[in-house]
Length: 138
Image 1: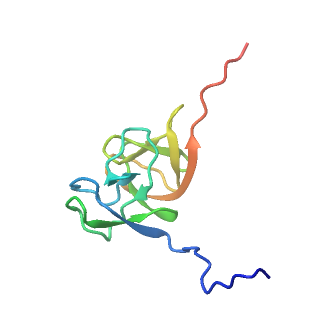
Image 2 (image 1 turned 90 degrees about the vertical axis):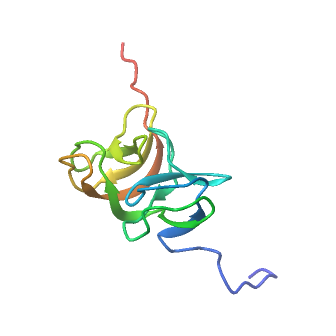
C-alpha cells in the first residue's frame, strides 16, 4: 500500500447531487437540466444534460438556490412526445424527454412507453453521448 492513508475514497454513491440554479427556474419537477459554470439552466433541444430534477423537489428555484438533481440510475422524466419502451431519449427545449435523433445527446433509455406529452415515464439515465449520424451507404 502507498504512503498516503485516506479515510474516504472520494466516491459518491448517491444518485443525486446538488447544484446552484444559474438562473431562476420554474416548473422543473421531472425535467432535465443542464450545467454550466454559473449553475443549472434549462437545456437546448438535443443538448447534453447533467440530470433530471426529481418530482420530490420544489417546482421553482431562484438563482443561486441549491437544486437536487438525479444524475444517474432509474427515475422519472416527463415525456415531451409519444415513444415506445426501449427508445433512446434526448431532451427537448422544455427539459422534457423525446426520442433522440442523429446528433442529439442520448441522456436516457425509456423503460416504459409514453402515450402523451406530460406523462411521467420511468427512465434509466445513461449519458451515452451523441447519437450517431446516419451512415452513408453506397
